[in-house]
Image 1 (cartoon, rainbow, N blue to C red):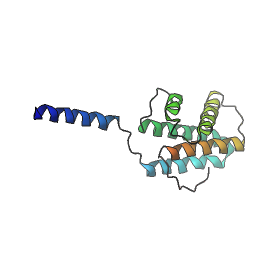
Image 2 (image 1 turned 90 degrees about the horizontal axis):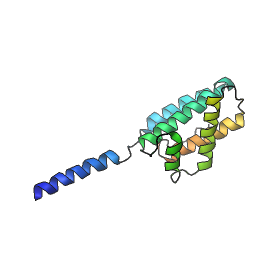
Image 3 (image 1 turned 120 degrees about the vertical axis):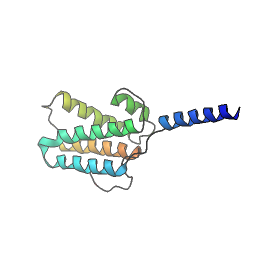
Image 4 (image 1 turned 180 degrees about the vertical axis):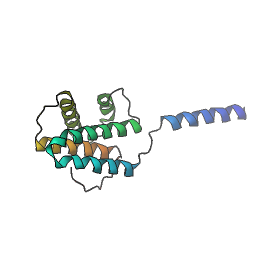
Length: 136
């Protein structure tokens, strides 16, 4: 009987370990965020900044095991965790628009707003520290 209990306990432990969200390597996400900020210096690379931020957030959502086949589905899964859900959706949709129509003209205010939305989402899910002072 004790042997069966031990086996069940081990199986349960393995299952919990697999399903538990992974701890994010904040240093890596901070480094990636700082690299994508370099795209903000020139208007021609603003789409690259948006795309990199969108990919970084998706990577963090996957690592934290938010459910969904697409980033949109993962954002829906994470919406209770996000403090600025509208800002994240604005950012994600702007990124999708730029990818679908590369000729889209971007305004500085829109890019800033989107990057602020992405950054806040990354903070909310623990990929960036909350005390980060680097602006978008």
